[in-house]
Image (cartoon, rainbow over all chains, first blue to last red; front, side, top):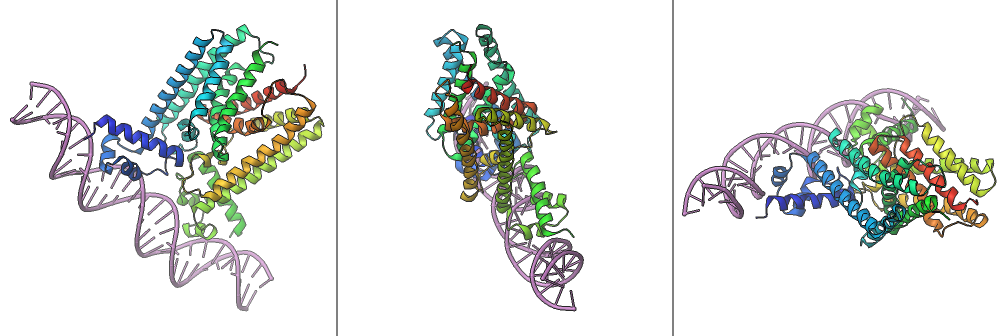
Length: 203
Length: 203
DNA sequence: CTGATTACTGTACCCCGGGTCAAGTTTTTG
DNA sequence: CAAAAACTTGACCCGGGGTACAGTAATCAG
């Protein structure tokens, strides 16, 4: 018999894929347990209800993504100590990472939750909000440093510029999915990169 | 008794609001008919099933949004015949329009459908795709004209620049919702405007 | 090796929501 | 005024979320 943590992880993995494809409500517990190879009772041994599954899934997702961004922009900073160049390299790395996904980006759980917050209690909504805020803060710090070294050519709100990264990624995923053209997302990230370049880079 | 078309419209109105708030699957037929003031059988007189509701809803939504964009950018063009200035005015008008929404943007059905395409047959998926393509085409035509008059300062893909408008709007809605800060969407549109200005406007 | 704990299975059951069906009733309209 | 349109009533089936509880197989601590 598999260890509890393995089963739990498998449930989360299966559920995440299904939910990103079809939505939360459309994903039945029965299909999840069938895919994992356990019974319905087995599911309820791990999660008291479907909501908790959503919550845990979202939490895990946010942690993974945050770590990914951390690694990516830390690496960019190591490659170039200049804040602007580090940002531009970071976005390039992000674009490459997205381009390497074989079937396109599987979707963003945070965005998914935004359009399906029925059962999602304040707990889940807050989780989502905190994640967005942490990403805003991360990029805002970077942009403040950039703006100090390179005065922006147009007056811009650096907070909303920070939000733009989340906006472009989440929006890009949607447009890419609607069109069934995975590379739309990559190109959107590169457009954002061009914007930042134009905004800060001296002639 | 209300006319058939009135009832149908009411069903669509109620359903749209509910679906944008909670998601498609989470919105029950029973709550819709309760809000409209008819019975379950009354609903099935108008729609053979819930899928058809989704389809008709999406179709209506796309038509409304397309007309809105038409009016908005036509008006912008009337105000200024220069293609670049017309685009910048159009985006300004869009930002103002979004800013005037009392409770923030209610959400985009196209985006919503992207994360919930279980029952959504090819019919619905295609509807979505065609809508995105029509918006891409509309803006691409405009950017081609702009690029001819104002050579862009950086080499950019004008198709993906066109997609960027949909990206920013859909992404902006998500970030605004997650943060519960409606003005995030407005600010994102204005960031896009700044990008376009920087990209094309001569010094 | 044993006994307790963990990680389940199996079965039976309740409720809700999508959806069907048939028959009747009220409005609207030509 | 009659036919067609727009419903209502009520009965029913099915699948899925969720509960309850008894039984069982693996794991692990002593």
